[in-house]
Every structure is written in C-alpha cells, then in structure tokens.
Picture 1 (spheres, protein in one colour):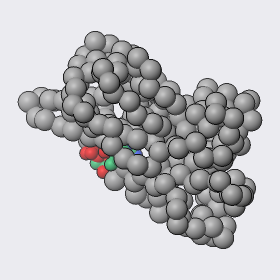
Picture 2 (tube, rainbow, N blue to C red):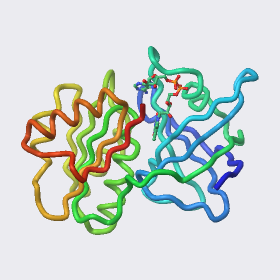
Picture 3 (cartoon, rainbow, N blue to C red):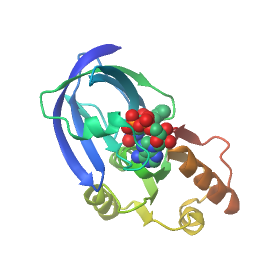
Picture 4 (cartoon, rainbow, N blue to C red):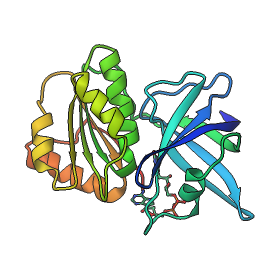
Length: 213
Ligand SMILES: Cc1cc2nc3c(=O)[nH]c(=O)nc-3n(C[C@H](O)[C@H](O)[C@H](O)COP(=O)(O)OP(=O)(O)OC[C@H]3O[C@@H](n4cnc5c(N)ncnc54)[C@H](O)[C@@H]3O)c2cc1C
C-alpha cells in the first residue's frame, strides 16, 4: 500500500542510530523482518530508501531503526535522523518475505542497523513463548542497549561484539529442529555472517537473509 505517514517520535538509541516511530496508516500491517519504503524531497531532490521494522508488531504506530554512517551514508538517513514529530513522509509497503513466522527458535545475526529487526524478532519470539538468540556486530559503539539488556533478562541469548563473529555464532547455532537463522545488515556484514556460519559447520540454506545493500 502507499500512504502518507506522520513521524510520531525520534529517539537516539545509540551513537549515529535513531529509532523513528511512525503513525500506522489504516489497514497497514507488517511482520518483524519486513521493510517499508520511505520517500521525501530533500533540497528539491526526491529520495526513497528501505527501512526494516524494529518494533515487534504494528499497533497504532510502528518503528524503524536508522543507522547513519558518517563516512558512507548519503543524505536520506541523516534527514530521517533529524526529523521533527509531525513531519510527513510517503511510505509504501510492506515488502519482503524474510520475516518471523513463529519459529520455535529465532537466531538473528545483525550488523549495524540490522540490530533493529534483531530486537524486534527476538521480542516477538519471546512473547510467543519461543526461544531467541541475537548476535549483534557493531562498529564504534553499540545501539539498542536497553532493549538488548531486557531481552537478556527475559531469557534470550545475546552476544554483542565488534570482533570476529565465529565464536558467538558457533555459540548460538544449535542445529535443533525449528531453529530459524536470520541475517540483517549491509553487504559486508552479510559476508562476515556467512563466513562465520560456515566456519561453525552451519549453512545459510533456508536462512532468512535481508541485505541492506
Ligand atoms: C531491504 C532493505 C532494508 C533496509 N533496512 C534498513 C534499516 O532497517 N535501517 C537502515 O539504517 N538502513 C536500512 N537499509 C538501507 C537504507 O535503505 C539506506 O540505504 C541507508 O539508510 C543509506 O541511505 P542514504 O541515502 O543515507 O545513503 P546512500 O547514499 O543510499 O548510501 C550509500 C551506501 O553507503 C553505505 N551505507 C549507508 N549507510 C550505512 C550504514 N549505516 N552502515 C554501513 N554502510 C552504510 C551502503 O553501502 C550504501 O549503499 C535497508 C536497505 C534495504 C535494501
């Protein structure tokens, strides 16, 4: 669907990482792991980019988490990070089929802003009485610390690292029936995650992978 949506709130959830809460248009629904396309005109130029849900569900609002890479990002992520409540954006979606579908154990490998869908999926899995594990690789400093800490308290396995992924990935992959592997992040992270899964004897066959580009 296409709709004009309103920004309800923005919150810094880490260095260069902002959670944007958006009003839900009528009849819009989406699952954690799906993404929307947000568009706006900045200095007379039209931009459109994709953002993955970082709320465990859609209520009268939903959330996306935006990472701003000071060296690589362009103007749109910076624009989103500085939005005032009440600003309107054009939205379409939801898109994507790499989302949580009630699997009994969700293992999410996340790089950079991929931490958004990671916390969303883990929260949703725990609320459904299932298991969750998150391996989050950050550069600089980690984001969504409060929600990751809460996930730990609720029984999820959470590994946060800026180092190689092999050890934490080997720790969370159990190979049990019903275990679903998810990978969210930019290209370079997806490569690292793939290597780590393979070096621990696993495979990405059947994994739900969303590459941010
Ligand atoms: C399916 C999908 C889902 C996505 N979900 C998210 C999401 O949930 N959160 C999110 O922040 N972004 C997400 N993205 C990326 C997002 O759409 C934009 O590309 C990003 O915000 C940069 O937009 P920009 O205009 O600022 O920079 P661009 O000019 O589009 O960026 C240029 C390039 O810089 C690099 N880059 C930009 N930002 C980063 C970063 N934070 N870390 C590492 N490299 C970066 C990438 O290689 C990118 O292609 C997603 C992309 C896709 C395709």
